[in-house]
Length: 309
Ligand SMILES: Cc1cc2nc3c(=O)[nH]c(=O)nc-3n(C[C@H](O)[C@H](O)[C@H](O)COP(=O)(O)OP(=O)(O)OC[C@H]3O[C@@H](n4cnc5c(N)ncnc54)[C@H](O)[C@@H]3O)c2cc1C
Image (tube, rainbow, N blue to C red; front, side, top):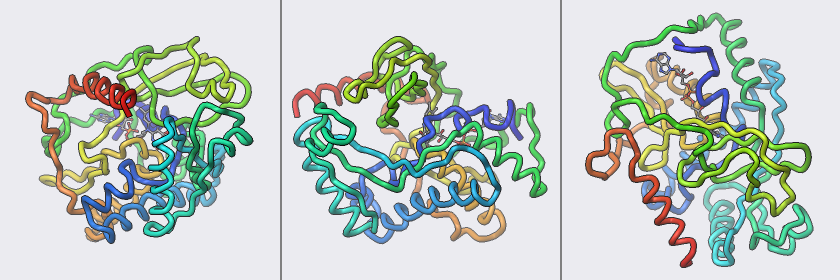
């Protein structure tokens, strides 16, 4: 049941980055859930990228899917030390081999002096999400699913604890800021989806990747990204309502993967849900009812922290 058209939500308009890894650091995941559960979580995210790729091959979805890799850059010298520790942790405890690039490596490859090193993950992918969504919808229909477009579903049960109880505030693309990472544009002009609210940037502005001679930004669009407070997805059943949400910027692969997992849960296999038992921590902010009024303050705090450290 889709109130608009299939793919008209975030899934059809996001940043196209199908990246490995969870939103929290491996060390944070271990601290909160213990090493075995943290590893399961990490593996689920990795399998999800594989699943998205497998589906494009099996269903012959022509969506320009490539394992282009992902570069996580060190903005300050001390950040390089933390990505060095992360690289060791990923290799030793999460079975994920990444490459550490020094400042001089970066000078040679993307040709920049701007950052202090980077972590290169070779397995992350990039795809055209509009084509991917369209292909998935076609494959689902061929398999016998019925997609009902322009059918608004009225709420049958309140949303689970910890999620907004009313529609989020309007989000104007010109007032949107940067998602945490982006693909390099080596030539042509840039199309940039944006998904946070504490920086302002619009068409005609330059991007942080000017460090790599990024072309000027021609078009900017935006949308809401659902971040759960603990920054892991939540899925389960609440009062007869099955839900899966809070992919925290990893929704391309996780929405695909969790769709399959939740179908198995509905089919009587609750253990198929890799997010089972996580609970729903509420946002510990007074008077929070879905409008994140505190985000600009959080942004200012982290900006100040960046300046000091
Ligand atoms: C600007 C932006 C950039 C992003 N970049 C990335 C990225 O690079 N990589 C990544 O992995 N993720 C990214 N994300 C996140 C990712 O797009 C989402 O996590 C994912 O698309 C969520 O999928 P979904 O199916 O839960 O929601 P959606 O794709 O939004 O689907 C929900 C659908 O429900 C419909 N709907 C709503 N209410 C009703 C109702 N009452 N009745 C019937 N239908 C209804 C909506 O029309 C919509 O089509 C980004 C998101 C945004 C907004």
